[in-house]
Structures are given as C-alpha cells and as structure tokens.
Length: 353
Ligand code: IPM
Ligand code: MG
Image (cartoon, rainbow, N blue to C red):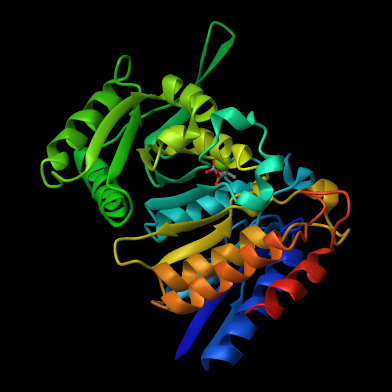
C-alpha cells in the first residue's frame, strides 16, 4: 500500500530522532512491501527562523493532504522571548485545533527490562503497570478566552476554563471504546468538588456510561489521581481527563515508567486521522550529541500504523523489536551508563524487524 506522511522534524533533538524513526518506517516499507512518501514541513522554532511564523499555512495544507503526521518536538530557549501567540508551542496548539485532533492517547507502560529505572519502590509496582491516558486536547483552559486586565496599576491574567457537553461526550466515548478494547476499566479524572466545568464533565460522563454497562467506571479528583499514580499505578488501566489535568498527569505517568524518552503519543480526530509524536520535548541540553533516545518516536510510528494506517502487524513488529532490544540489555544514555547512540540503538531495532 501507499501512504503519504507529513513530517515535522521540529527543533532541538526533533530532527535527530525523526531521522531514526524514518529509517524504521523504511524498513517496514521494505519488509511489508509498502510505499511511504514523506513531505517535510516546518513548525515551531525552525519555522519562526525560516518564515517568521510558527505555523505556516503551507504546513497545515500539507498535513491535511497526508494520511498521517509525524512530529519530533518543538521549542527551545532560543524562542522563549517570542511574543505569546507566535511561540513554538503555538504551532502545536494550532495543529491540534485546526485539524480537530481532540483525542490525545498517551500510553504509559513499564517495560520489565526497565523496572530498575522506575523511581517507585518495587513493592508498590510488583505487577508492573500498563495504562493509557486519554486526554482531551482541543478545549479547556488551553483554548478558552484569555487575556489581561489592568486595575489600579495591578495586572491580572486570566484563562477561561470551559467544556461543553458535546466536547466531553466525544472524548468520553473515545475513552469508553478504548476501555472496551482493553480491560474494561475506566477512571475519569476531574475536580468536580470545586469546578463547574468538572461538574458538567462528570454529569456527561455518567450519562454516556449508560451506553457502556460492561465498563467498570470510576470518578477521581485530580489531586487524588496525582497521588494514586505514585502510590499504586497498577490500579489504573484507562484514564480519561481534560486538557490541563491530562497534560500534568501524563508527564507524571511517563516519569514512573523510568524514562520520558520511551513514551509515544497519538492525537486523533473523529475519523482516526492524527498526529504522532513522542511525549518528551526538544531537549536542547542534549541536542546534537547523538545520545537522544529515539524509542518514543519509533513507538509513535508504531501507533501511527495501528491507529491511522490500519497496519496492525507492522505496528506489532516495531513494538516487538523495541522490546527485544531492551530485553537484550541495549540502552540509550537516559537509561544506562553503558549506552548506544541514537542511531546505534535504531540499528539494533531495525535488525529485529
Ligand atoms: C504536551 C506539551 C504541550 C501541552 C505544550 C508544549 C504546549 O506539554 O504536549 O504535553 O501543554 O499540551
Ligand atoms: Mg505536557
């Protein structure tokens, strides 16, 4: 089959890790007889440098015409002084909202081979964990009205938090469907003891819960969820939550797996079209050293194959190869003293596909 992939390498380590992910895709193409056409486009800091604009219209057009989008990472200290609205982060937010990528799927899996890297004491994670955070990505305080007011010489900033029932329904259904495919357990995280937004969230979740009677559903306040994630992560399977809480909890969940360099993510629209990217950022401190961990990006290509391209066997081939390489003890610099470079670990992964 033939696929068109929009590729945004981005900033910092983005280009290094995306180059490796492309090598993995090329290996899949060869082995399974597919053709992947890559269209490279700019977003974030590199787009600001080249065009003055963090998200050129051309990039959105190329993304719209593609079957899927692969992104490295955007941002870095060089662009921190850019005006709000034209920062590298705005490119990400712009792609998410313009393409309606409302469902952010962030798995957090503890690999057996990496259990020593997990910062939680062994007795609390004896059974390991394998969870997915389903984060709403195009609403909430991220996209509500924001601004500043001045009064008596005092500046006040504000960002409106809001969710409509319609927004909650579509992310809720996504999460229930995910739970149905896994162990039929779903925890919805909110702050309904304080926030009206969360009360609407919770009422809506309870309504759609009726459509999924087989799912073991629970509600949890976000402060408690943050605590439970480090106390006993194995209790979670699928978590569904809003944009801001999901941002915070997904970083926490990634850290307890041992390394943020391992975790992929998908951001999907209603039809399954989406953007795939590692959870980690552009890591300016290690850029250009050849030591970045490419696995999160490589696993993101596996998610792309599974969720958007309908290539489940190919996705499993990538995931199995990654697991094999970890089981054999190969590590990148974030995970061990005796480590392989970004391209060397990719060589190993490719050799097991
Ligand atoms: C993420 C990031 C982004 C977010 C930033 C870079 C805008 O932290 O994808 O989690 O807050 O959503
Ligand atoms: Mg984040």
